[in-house]
Image (cartoon, rainbow, N blue to C red):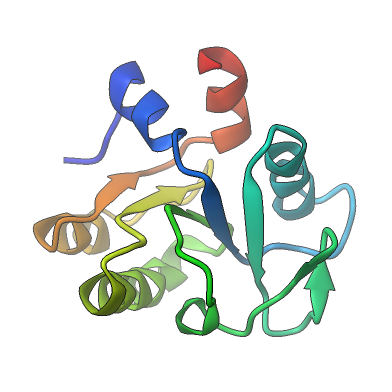
Length: 139
């Protein structure tokens, strides 16, 4: 069951490093402005964007598997139809490295079946919520 309660959401916000799948180089887009907000609020943001070398002053990675740092939370800015593939990547990383134990699907993004599969592998999932809005509300 995806996390919906304030206690669970707040616990996920304890992550130090957030890998942002679909992090954008374009100011004004949510996929740029939300990670910038997270950076300003003390998080290390690791952009995952195969079309960029750098985003927000951080090296951008082609895929989650390429990220060298330990990842506490994976924030997703990709269409709902891409969520199963993204969550497969998260599940694989979690199984191999033991990190990336939580995924936050941004506002308007959800996939119940893929979320349930990820949860069965011990990954916590938030769906259809903006991490910036929840951070501002809870912190």
